[in-house]
Image (cartoon, rainbow, N blue to C red; front, top):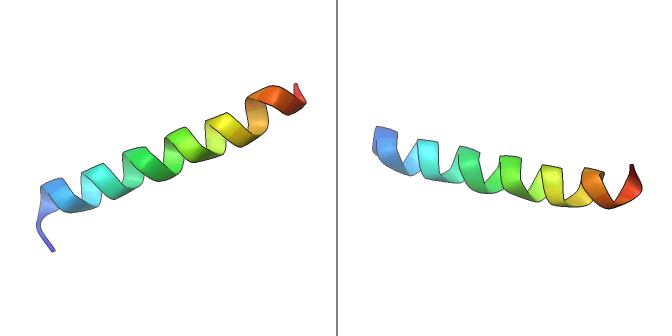
Length: 25
């Protein structure tokens, strides 16, 4: 995997985590 692919996966995971946490706040 390239660095950009790892960055993209990290951003998607971060956005997913934020999407799960925000409604609970």
